[in-house]
Length: 219
Ligand SMILES: O=C(CO)[C@H](O)[C@H](O)COP(=O)(O)O
Image: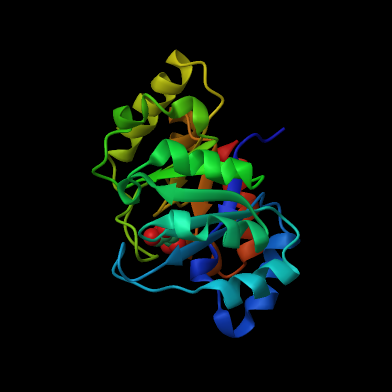
């Protein structure tokens, strides 16, 4: 049985046919819908906000994995819970009181995720790893889809896995950015549990088949 979760990133979806792309994910072998919310301040891009998330939520049948690339994410924790997020990921670099923010996410009944930019060392999570359900390692600089995978991510996955094991934590490791069939197996072998894939899925000829392919390769 396959253990790696696949989370297609709707950032690469066709927004003229959003419902169709959400339903494709529903009917595929994917595990989560990955949704990137960008504010144009934390990252140099603005993606979409609450009305679009509401439209996605209306049609989605799989858990919504919402990744906030925004400053001061505490302001919106309740809003995203009300919009149906199952997993809410905030950036380490955007939080002053990360421990408090994680508790606030859990208090709203969501799984708590922390994303790390490519330059951020995983050791910074040492004192909070047991409170994190998912660590999202950015394998590109956040803000845009379609970028090339940063190879140092493998070292970060291994270091994070060691930290999780050392602390007896149950944290999942998610990889976001530049995931393709070429690096999926190496990532899971290094310790990744969840693979986010945007362009590789939605820009392919047959996205359902591409998800299946990733699922098989990732194992
Ligand atoms: O967070 C992201 C970029 O900031 C994304 O999840 C991005 O959509 C990944 O897409 P791709 O698979 O095309 O790299």
